[in-house]
Length: 359
Image 1 (tube, rainbow, N blue to C red):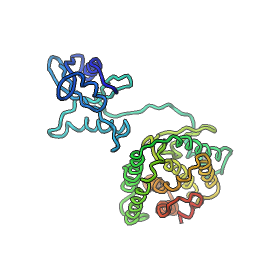
Image 2: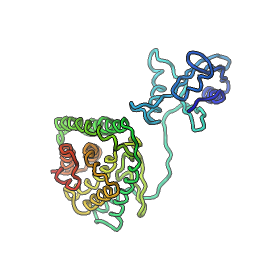
Image 3: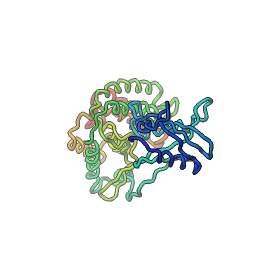
Image 4: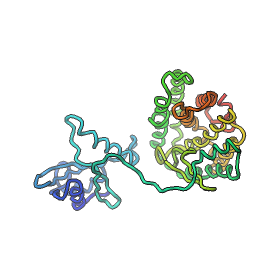
């Protein structure tokens, strides 16, 4: 944004405070030289003097600048400003917030008023959840098109991941979030497992976390791999319609590590096979092999297996959780726990011999 003009400020004041609001002056905090408006869009505060029903008032407009400390995305900055708007007035001696809004593509200042909750509106898609196909395969075996669909998943990921970005800090952020976010590894350990959980006691969690710290430092060297990602590519986020599919619920940032997407679907082939056979074999091994082989053939990316282990841990924690998956047999959960510990002990994930990690 290259600055705003008087008309847009006045329009905002009228929308936010009513038709009785009139702009008197606007400029730098130090003075009301209106040349200061030109810098507002770059994070420079703007002092506005206005009258409201004959009473003269002043307000400071601010835009938060993006930075590498977790504020790269528009939605990061929006969450900070919303936090300040909703909580500042509750703190003794804190400056009082007067408004919250956004600047649209046309440069208009749009107030957000009496906000209670956000919502999103998406198109309605035809099709069925892909996990229903996996249930069918477990009961009836592979049908025509099942292997082709797994290959299509891999080809789609290859196209998504082909978009690259050079941003070391953004890749580091993705790895930090993988380990430390409330939605990811540490959040799952704290919230998706009961305290004093006999099947995986505290000692094993502590050892797992210690290994992950070492992996965090290893993955810092792989920032050249930053790519466009989906972030949550699993069977509940895929709708299948005939031979086609669509995806839902992109998560955790637009950019990340391709290995996260790749292992998220793969570990579900593993899960369904564990539940059926106690190991990866039969039809689910065919799906798993087709998926990985197609991805490597399309991308040539074998380095992905050097960075995948912590992402496997994350996804194994999800599908092994007794809170989210209460009906697993003990041997299924045990295999997943062994997997997430053992993959961290090797520098490269041996995807073709995954069964040995679960022993």
